[in-house]
Length: 633
Image (cartoon, rainbow, N blue to C red; front, side, top):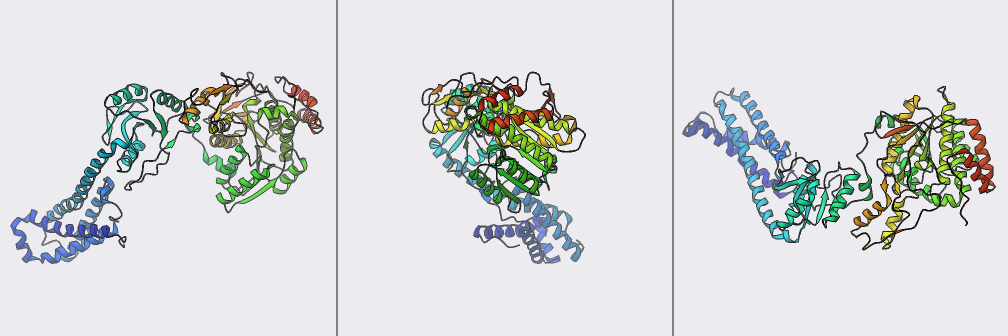
């Protein structure tokens, strides 16, 4: 084993070898006293010491003791030293037994030698670290006036890493206290930083720190178990107490034994809306996809592209990207080509409203699984262009589903939306028809053969087309105001990653549970969020004050919008599945043939751009939808 070409490592090795030689002589002296020198005459002490030193040197090299840094000597280093000392004694014992049968050396000398060797190896290391820590603490105390005082939320491993990294002389922050997010460990401390209270006691803790001249300027989340509601409450409390809010990354870049700056990142909108991660059955998801041919429609969209990313990670035999937008198709094709260079990837430019193109794609590439994410989903835009929305969302879904049946696809997954429940807009009503058709076909195949159709319904996805979050971010960048349609408007939100994970989970679950045929899988979206509250929190996240630095204006409901969305229709029995995060709705069923004939009528009206006839037909298919005339262009 070669030493690294560093002079300090050679010095450390020389030190340890010298200590090994000294330890053997000291052990003999501690056991025999002045008789040590008599023992010299019975056996060459120099030869024995040399043999012990040679053994020790070989063991030290084999145990990689010189990769660490003395300044950061820790319990891990003590374990390594203990192992090295033990191996040295055992190997030396074996050699002595082979040469002298241990007749000349008292047995207890080896035990004493183990303790002495460990003390001589570890003592200097920890003395050196104590000296360096004292020097560093003195430098840190001199520079504390320029560091940002922070209050940490969480008293676990990540808080410990943060505090340790903050001991670096060039760290930008200094921890002045800890808050326990779960109410535990109050009164204890981590590296001298006290756990001052729970998050519910933040006001009292901050007041006490101010009284001591240690008022925190920033609240830092180190506990990643906090859900969105808890993060929102922390943001409100921090704002009220004059602190900004940040968090450390989920995977800390700080390495033990390396001096690094404390890294933090701002709180993102996803942190405010997130919930504890659902337990996913990735084995069943991989079993569904691995080695299969997969086609994704709308592959370049926000949902479609994330579907493509996650599906590609499960090792499909081939992946067909079906997308109407050339640029989006190019972007996702390039991304996945780099992400999975050995995968068979087929970018297809095509529109789900084109029956020839859809049928050709299915017949040529013979997918086993089809994920149908293509849709027009921006509510006001579809409201202004109802014939185009109906043609894509209703007719396009029917064309894709029929092509799946005709070409022996095992499973088609229909991506739906909460706007399909009691719809007040064309987008929601058209997606409800798409749900109905997939549901009807799934029931028509109840004999166990043919294509399975699984429909997954969920609410708004952060950053997706039509989402309010990108709009707010753009308006913030322009200095405001942020536009909210109504003070009482609420929406369900989910991150695109979590939504797609649960879509794949629901798909795998649906395949394995034929009893759920004809039902709609609904993702648990948690609690709805008031849009005006979201706007205020985004302003705070930007370091600004709502209604002072950035105004919020109310513009009134846009065409087709309603104040709140629902995940279930009042007449839909809700069924809790054994899979966390996934519910099941059982809406009324329709006959596939009759529904197909009605969609044919919608198609004819849409292709001749007769919006009035298309809206009338949509109203007949979805009675709860009250059709409105399209807004004037």
